[in-house]
Image (cartoon, rainbow, N blue to C red):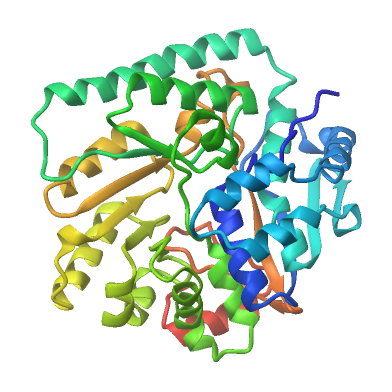
Length: 399
């Protein structure tokens, strides 16, 4: 079988930035990550079990090469001791397990967080690519290229339109649910060469290195969720996570994720101190316009000039939705748009080309449940209803 993953750089930048912070601050944390498919695939994912296990076997043979470490070390926010850790790092096969129950594919990574947190993106990329390999690649790629050309033209048309105060900036966030690694590379290279005025980077560290692009990313939900189980008072977990981030990066990587327990609860903790120290906020659930208006109102209340801050949108965006949000907010603040599946897995209308809605989320840390109270119903992933009820009560979030 042709390997899905051939480089440990073929993952999202925020995996490295969270990894470094947790290695420095909480290296003994034990954690559990669980794979879930939220929609109905054409055929049962359980059929992929032998191939998934083979791909995981291969993943656990990979090491960082010296040139990969040199690239990571060239990023000013990556510290030398973290590079030393990565030099000896190797995924341990005993920390990840895949099995089938009926039609369901189960994958769990469990062990020291600094040894298992990296599995998430690789597992999702593996399942996606193996799933789509069973369908007609020729037809899929032909349709994908037609749709890619339309998107490029949408961006090129921006040059003929009236510009707003702040530019439109697009990022590729499509690694986790990509059609394939080769297709993501083609998509990113196409945008980088044909729409460089608007396309500003990718979350994929390997592609950023190979194509000379800016690697994009700061933190994901798992980082903030981990602090629900790290000994701080639950009501203060967001403040503790943000404070550790500030101390770790001291001005770099300043986009904060807002929806671990919902935007309203986040803004209660995002006081003047944090609002000045962080460059901006990232949206990942709920109504994006309502979210953006709340963010701008919060900056106004704190007497912070919103033109000095950035709002990044990344929740299930299409290019059309991103452009609409740009028209709404582009005169009022700096913006960024991270588009995922719509860029890297938009391969046609055939039923077999419908993207999988798969995630692999942190569900426990140090033996305790952790959870995300998303602003979008259905995004919560937690198997402990008692803990969910308690979390909602502490942050006054409705069910």
